[in-house]
Length: 227
Image (cartoon, rainbow, N blue to C red; front, side, top):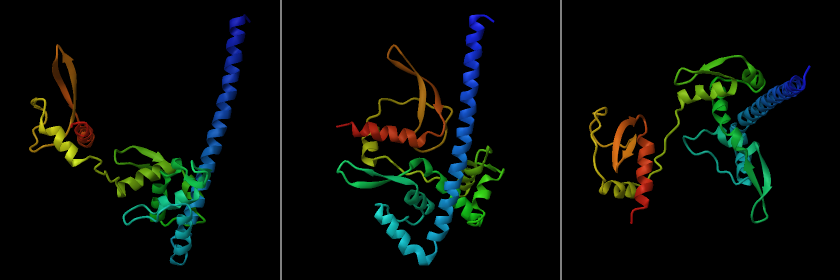
């Protein structure tokens, strides 16, 4: 074989080794994640028992974490109190930092509780080959699937991140108005549109759907810059 062939074969062989290692790593990482989530689930079922509420709250406070408010997912606190690490902050003191990548599994844990999964059966339940459908009809399995299933029952609450006074300043002196023939709904809403500018004139090409909150946030930011 020539030099080119030898080099290609060598690269291919090394790439195969890398792929195999990556596959093994992903499999091991997923299995460890499932095990940790199952352990957190067992902790939560124990912590939610009335006789253990005081001790659990003490653990939260020792990590500077506040108990769940009414309407919040209490499983997030269980995740945050157990999955994280101690670090030294800027003042030289030891502090607790929850692992943010695990926070999303609080929804899966709430879903498992709603299905009356037992402590003993938690890991097997997570591992089972079962698909869950989300709001858009897509299907996922395992923890991600359970997160999607929980969202159907507990949709995310969109908080208004805008400043009313800033929005009022932004809309008090509009630059102009452009008819939107594709949107005939009554009343004021905020929206994002797209187009291009030619010779100082903005040409509207279309409206972006479902951008009310994002556009209102744009107006709020713009209003804060108005003196």
